[in-house]
Image (tube, rainbow, N blue to C red; front, side):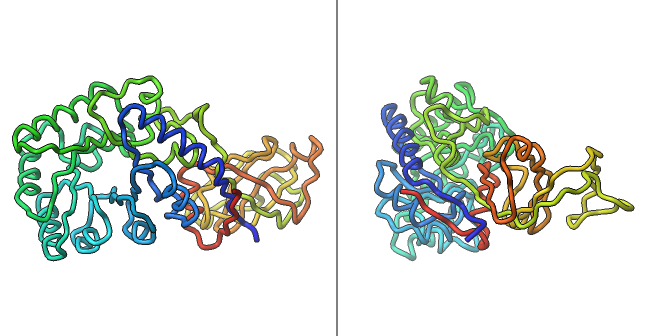
Length: 358
């Protein structure tokens, strides 16, 4: 049934094998991020059978459904209202608030658990973490960890290229390593993990420029889409077509290229200007903005042009494709490669079916 997401498990395994072997050769453990495919059971089974070291996700709901003996790491700073669930579900959480850390320790003690904390440091991307220059605040959070019997000071971490677009490099990552060393000396603890980032580290990994001491990467987009997020470009070593959206044409009509009448707002409150390009053969696919970020779709037929979408309809220009001999008709399907954001929405939509290739 369409629209459907075609998931190639063989290609995902090839990506996974390359990433884990490349990282392990450099002494770096790999946390595979499952949020973009909502912890899909088939993909998680593939990860579980691999040499990946642990699972990571921003949502507790996803971590809860992963059946594994590997560790589970919560990526998003936890809400205080979910602390008991965090400690029960995740082996490791990434935190920055002393109050939340203390609550985690109290919960771990009640549950007779030892919960691991990675203290997040902000190196300039300005999302989560204690700003790296404020050592007093870092020590306050660290004090909260070491004072709780139910907690283990497991590591320090950073997130880059997600909010501010700041790229990882030897200079900013060295600050994370220096912070870890200061904390190790202050508390006489091993603090074994320095979690250096995400798929934006791929260029540094390939060029062997990751500073010694960084020993964990959290990889999502490089695994599922084969991209280095620091450049937005595909990696030659990885498959970029592990996920393909296939949608069905429900209408093919020759119509004007510019809407006719007085122009106002569309269904999403937007005022869109249209260029008059004469008549074109327009196709409508049964998929829309409720299912996918259409700006993140790339058609596998380079002669098909995406014009726009409403909630349930994706409008494409088929004129050039038909002139090149592809006689699209109602009932035919068209395939697209999704971006990370488009894939995130596709896997969240209950209206998208899934087909697996293995």
